[in-house]
Amino acid sequence: MSKNRNVGIIGCGMSKFSSHREEVNQPEMIFEAVEEALADAGITMDDVECIVHGNMELFEMVHQPDMWHALGTGTRGKSGVRLTTGGTTGATLACAADNLVASGLHDVVMAVGFEKLQEGHTTGGISNMADPLWGRKLQAGALTGTTALQMIDKFGEERAKACAMKHRVIMDEHAALNEKAHRCFNLERSFITEMMDASPQLVGELRMIHMCSQSDGACVVIFASEAKVEEWKKKAAWVHDHETVHREESIIFTEEKTTHRVSAERIYARNGITNPREEIDVFEMYDPSSWWGLHWLGEFLLLDGDEHLQMVENDEICINGKFPVNPSGGVVASNPIGATALVRVAEAAMQVRGTAGKHQVPKPVHKALASGFGGTMWSTLMLLSDEKLNLEEAS
Image (tube, rainbow, N blue to C red; front, side, top):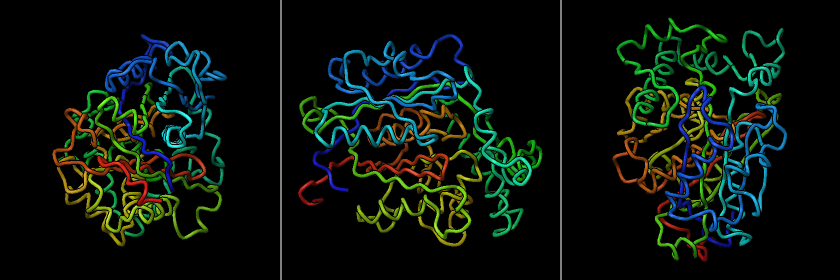
């Protein structure tokens, strides 16, 4: 992917994520993230030229919410774009914002993702995704036991279940460091065996403890051209590349490679990355459940055999480990669906910029990867760096 201009992320903001934000309406909740992002960037709404807005529109049952949300986003009198691509909405917002700046159409673009799921009926909207008769042992809407079944068959029940539960505990340890996180249970490693058997079953070996929740919250990320970054003397996380791959779920069992692996292969090839575990410093992964997070670690890092299980067993994915994954706590800690994938980009940018606070990775972060995931096996990756691209060399 060639770029006309370098694009940097200069500001990130998030509301507090919670199961219910009854004290604020949608524009007020969004404004919390807008205000924080503007303060982080050190700019005002007068500097923002375009707002890219997205959520799972029908989950709140409000048509064209971006029109109402102009009260909280500051869109009035400015260019605006509304996008919805399912669970990947937040990542799509980031890709669109990057393209709008890289193309030269705008110099400063604000991406706004949100969800206020308490005001709608998310489960009702998702629960009809799978056939209730034929799929009931493997699939119930967005809940799937397929990955757990496959991993148990491949690696053995005891080891697979223990690794998935340890992945969940590590994410909870990270969430405890993140003041914005929705769920933090203070799970203890000494009770891994008890927890993986005691938690209620959802589908097969996918249990309630493994699964992400529904969260209310908003996220805002500000993208700026290289000229603006230099003019304002800002610390930026530079967007090097992004990749999107998707396909219909109905053919998932007939293809060799997942969309995660294909997107990873493409973005690594374009950017000369031959060993992602060595060349990328932190990964903010869209992990809707611990089983998926464990499995997808191998897909995104192009691993073979049981290497991804070993990474969890050896604490490599911990915040102070060799390859930190989700220092924020990930999706199992906070899941405001329309914003969730944008949170991954924001958290990756914060790691590069050194602004993540208590959940900042202790080692230097030069490159960070963020992913998004949604229906129709839609996978999006964004690669960020502390160094801008050499556009002449890249072209």
